[in-house]
Length: 464
Image (cartoon, rainbow, N blue to C red):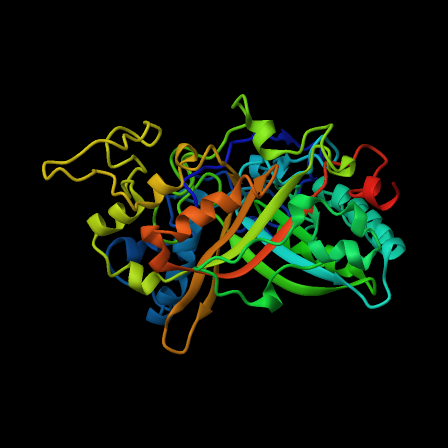
């Protein structure tokens, strides 16, 4: 984990038509469709029977049992929460309303870069790696990427899959869905394209913090799915898996989540499962050197990777039982930032530059020498930087109650040997956070630039 945050994005709203008004009856309206009485009833609590005159005078009405009252209490709470504590029922079906901003937000499939890199963090995510089936080669891979690209374009526009759609997301808009495709090291040998494999895709070195499960690492093909709605994200995952058909089989799959948009009073940097604000110093698209750090230049090598990026994917388990035994002060010293607002221990706000030389009354550094935020700073790593775009994960509890939870770390850079590798090597040598995390899976993928209109992702490699 590094001390960088995700840039914000302002996706364009969907042009999807406003849904037609529902014909379903509204609770409280007449079953025959007649207009509601013009008499003004006394305010009632939705979900509870209206009081009779005897009840209003303090006498329980006949036939209203304790069980009935208890049975309706839960429904009352739900109605109050959903309707903003409005009193009384609607007299007639409400007019249909357009999708909320969450549902109508749309990312574009075609563009200079693939989607899912610079967009804001989404609430739900799925990562899945595939291996080509035995006997499948370049031709089958090209057909698969063509199918996947067509499906991604449709789903990101809020449309159903072209064939055998599951209808899981038929009520929803695009919900900021992004689908991103990448190639692993082994893909090039499987397709006879070894001479086109980028040098930047050489395997990552071993790190002392690695406890890697090979079955959940690497893969010929990698797909990243993100959306602001869980069903929209799952719908895309299922469509991608079905499209693979007999050409590829799933090697591993992981599910993640982030805080939902709108859950906080104002937009803020995400928190991880340790409770820390995580990602304050992420590169931003407004930075003068952002494109240079994150994307392969248009005239870069190999040519088919122009405007692409390299994704390092790590499943990092957080040892939460150990972490939560620390005091607040101890946790903040491990990270080097305040837990409450993400500000550096040297003072100021979240975005105030960290003063690495500031000392306390005892003469020691205010930001400890082995603090995670100090070690991961680009100016402490020869300028090395990467764009972090992670998801948290939770895969249940062990027999002893230990949570299997942590971070699906995903970072983007123009060259991992100049981005992820030097920072991870520095962390390996003395990061205070290392004793509370464990790297359990890893992958490195070449993610080509975005597909132009009429193209599919990877076409310049597979047909070049």
